[in-house]
Image 1 (cartoon, rainbow, N blue to C red):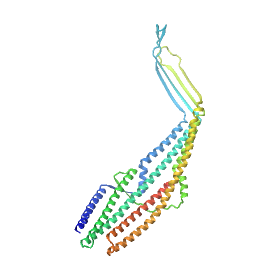
Image 2 (cartoon, rainbow, N blue to C red):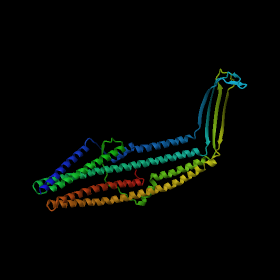
Image 3 (cartoon, rainbow, N blue to C red):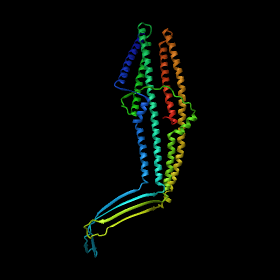
Image 4 (cartoon, rainbow, N blue to C red):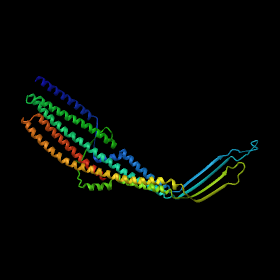
Length: 448
């Protein structure tokens, strides 16, 4: 009996020491951390301003716009001006197999300049096709920009509500910690009076330690998730974010799956991108075929060529001339060297058609998954709400029995754990339902 009491006292002291260590770590974890309260709208707005993926996508879109302007410049006339200067050494005239030579005092300096202009008249539709391709690329980049924006928004919503869920878990567990501490105070008094065994007190102390470890781990998860959101929003990385004004109402979605799928096919950026990609491939085929056609251009030139005065022999005549005309060229080799390019372009169009079907299949699977998970999460909320009611009722019954000495402390601990688990599960289910709703809206292309 003495050995048993010694073991229980040793366990009791160990638990007390463990509580002290956990409390110390918990205090250090929350020390010297700046806390910033933030709403969901503020978080999304900061992410749109500072997220690097979104900034890169914006730059790609701006580059595509500049490329359209660059392609249109091909229609403009070109203008060039040039000149040259030559130093001519004195020539030597050799006669009789190099046995007799004569050095000629020739003029040494020669200059020339010219100005030329031209304008494309007809390039087989090449310029027009290049402009059309640049415009398609710009549309693709715009769709990618919108898709990136929606992806970031969904990610921020998911992480924001996940962070709020962790704060709610801390509140629930800390409420249980306070309740257990009250029980410990009562048990310590009863153990001192011999009304309860020390083992009952040890079990309750262990329960408290487990709760405090859960709190400590949850705060660490809060800091990790805050760090992720800080990176996405451009906030200082040592900031602990605390969500405020969070709407915990699960939005309703009354549409049937077929209606959700129809909206997804109409709105999703991926489908629009794949269709635009096919249009781009069709323009590539048109571009290749343009090389079968002749090129026509207009041109004008003025040039002059004269030596520097003071040279020998003197040059009294200076040749100046101007010219205007029309140029026509045709690449005869295009009849045999473009066949494979044309076939490759046609195969690319067929590949793009297959890709459109593949994208539709992927979107249909995403919508189906999001729809099922949202409906499932709504059902889970109702179930967990009932579980909370039942666990609280069970706790009241067990506590009444325990107060009247008809139940053991282990029964109380089990009842408290059931209440704690059911509240945590309900909190998780509500947050999950909200996240799944936004995931469904994203899959439908309606996350604006």
